[in-house]
Image 1: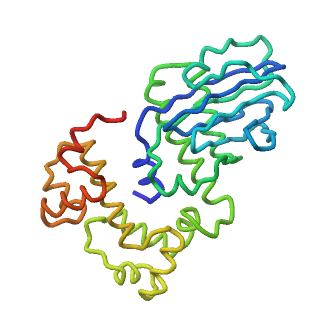
Image 2 (image 1 turned 90 degrees about the vertical axis):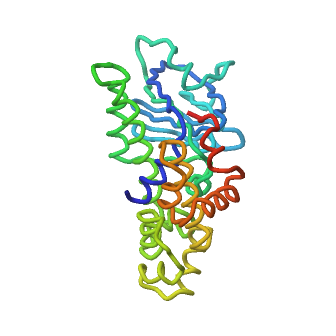
Image 3 (image 1 turned 120 degrees about the vertical axis):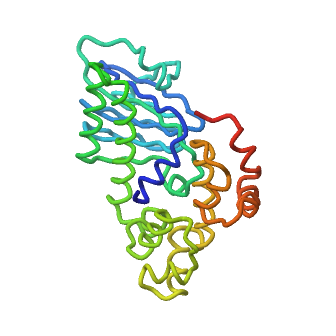
Length: 294
């Protein structure tokens, strides 16, 4: 599994929601904050304006996608001067919006439940605006399934939502020149190679020297470069990823603790349990019994 796919699999914690909504001028709708989630808006037809507190209005045209990583409240309107609806809606309630006879704008409104611990999400700006042909194609397929549900739509909609998120993060990470942070790390051949090896085989007895060798650098320059881009030293990130992988295995499988320990690079269950408790604040067995966020 490549690093970005791995990251998305770990970040996803709950059920994404989405609604296809048609609007007729004049219109202005508030969207409530969604705690613990990341919101998105896709303009499928027409144009509208994104309105946020303490920010200038942003015009959105057909094909534009807006991602709000922190799920903060915002509004959409046909014009920056159009009065907004008094009550704010969310992706679950906007589905009940009446269908107008002559819509001027059509959007996809949705939200993902994501674990915001991953540094990739922390690196994202408060508002990500992307216009990308592959992203729009995925959005169009998703909109079609929502507008005309058929056999298999219940399986296709969540899969297309995952696809939409992947295209969105891919477009953001590759579409701009990033000098620091995770986008830069994924596009830097040295750091990306080391991340690939860590994600592919977290159980390997990695050292800074071994990771540097995979990336074709000596130890000190590699460690400096990795830390500057990822925000953590190589072995600190390795431990974090091992614990993140272990947490996912504890929740998603019935594998014994000894098996999970081996899969993330620990020779004994005791050593793994001690490391997991340091990282997560609770023993792995108790963590497994905690109610799932899904």
